[in-house]
Length: 278
Image 1 (cartoon, helix red, strand yellow):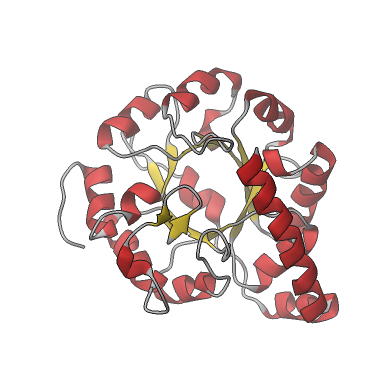
Image 2 (cartoon, rainbow, N blue to C red):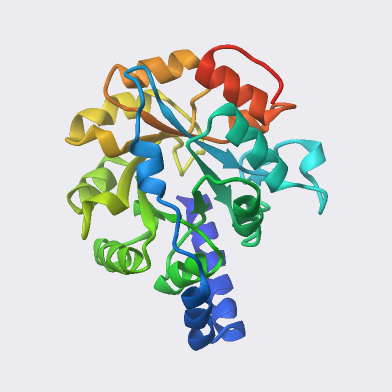
């Protein structure tokens, strides 16, 4: 996976630099001053009706495969809080916020800006390869974090799940390849069942191609679909219905929404089937 390997190598350099800038004792003190995290797990697993799907709406400026998603997202004028408000009004259950700067144009500070703007819980979407980043995430105000199976050994994943639970962070454990799904499946719900979700990424991390049918193929390997999240490739209400037909009622949607002139209106159409300004 050349793109993923390049991202992880860059992230290792960034983490070492961050550790040098901020001593752990200082980071620990910052965490102690933070408010309790918002309950990300409860927000996305709560379904008021049988035809309901919880949408984790993503704030994403660019990606290695797509580049800058829209021209107006360039520069400091980019306002994640404005997009978050639109998502909240349209019915998002939670927000996913890209914080990787080098490849995705995100910033760690976006998390607090979003939380100050909306009452929804916020997932830090980044490439977490070191426990230090869990402390960093909590200090930055994150309510949840992403752990990617393709980036971690099984032992590293277990250690991070324990630390995340101690920090009161919900974890979205993501896998793309079948072998990695089988690797992480036994650890979903460890060490506490209401702190972890299982994501199937429909984007092939080696080619960056997206196929919604990937979830449909792997769903049979998941016993508890109430915590299953389908990620990437979801564009229409019909896609949500297709996923609900196999028991998947949580989705993460980013690039499709961010490509639209009004991401909030696009989210409203996805959820409700009608488009209206938000």
